[in-house]
Image (tube, rainbow, N blue to C red; front, side):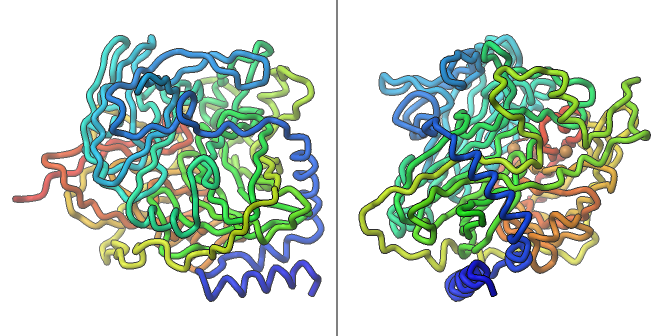
Length: 560
Ligand code: C2O
Ligand code: CU
Ligand code: CU
């Protein structure tokens, strides 16, 4: 046993007593020799040049932290910020004024049970609507796009935040405008806190913006003036728009400083189409971390892992014990290399008269045609090994907190498995350049299916072999993943029992379904809302949803 595997093995064993099991960790460890350590060394070299302090949520301004009770209006506006140093970038933003301070895309803070009472005023020249991603609110307050707000119009939201503590988020949902509006800046965070959350913060002595750090992962493309470029070709409107620059909290090539303690990262993949294979690395190898929560809040126990995928729309709540790191070296948050599985291309997919290139080469084609604004940056293709952020370790006050063994009472929440045959959701595409669910292209006027309020259903989401990964998102309800079958090798490497990935251990609102996979999920359609409620189920690769991969469904009010 080499020193590395030995240290690693002991580390994992130590964790087993205190926390959950470790799917995939041995396989991944064996892979951490040779090729992987070369890859990681290259990532760390890239990160060494990162010189921009990470943008953090402060008390005002961009991503300023704002309690839900302290504002009554959100204006959707055009604004301008500095993303690339020295250049002004026009953006779309959620603007709020509160207590004499101005906020752009505020990070909203709420306590479970709080009321969201806010008027959205549309001050741009396109229809829009705010969707509260992950919250189980009624159809009207969901902002699912079945009703939108015209330019100059407004809409009043009024609902109780009754969800578990977690990182939720908000973004536009007017069909026909979602990808471009989100890409141009309309997206931010919504933290819901409850007693589990308060206990965890206290136990680990965490403070938001300092030792608990939200990370919004996005990829963007800029022109020479620093303006965002979003001009998908037919192939990119179908396959998804992948920007060539990686941003964290709208900071390119960022770094932070952190003490030798447990640090919490609340990670959102806010990209339109890009997937990431996240790992923390140091000295040529991955550093174990703990998955503490998923889309729908804290896991029962922290789960020690080495890497995990995050798809558009998904969130990860992560604890990294930096005392396990070498104090003499920085740690890097990275996306490791993977096959993005853009397998839908080829001769059977000519759409609208365009000879579509095989999608595996799509990213390259895209950037081959568009000269980069700045020749010094290298383009990030999806699946390339890349550094996302460097973490410099600094000496810090003595910290003796331990990784908690219990995070929440999720283990006591029954998984709504049923004996009934699952409802099938077949993911595919047609020859007109549309993505489909059960062969259907989205029609907002038609409810493609209905379920009974209070029903427990299992859905079997089946992705075609010749397809792309689809992060399928359900509005209105969180759900559990029961099993994954037919997973591609990249995914199997990280999977544990029943093919489940790390975040399948939690409550989620978005499940990543890879080409060839059949994923069984369990949904409890219980909610307190009176009357029939309409929601949507869609792919969170925003271009895929625009290209038809969305369906409307109705939750029928129960008898009585
Ligand atoms: Cu995050 Cu229907 O969306
Ligand atoms: Cu949503
Ligand atoms: Cu998709």
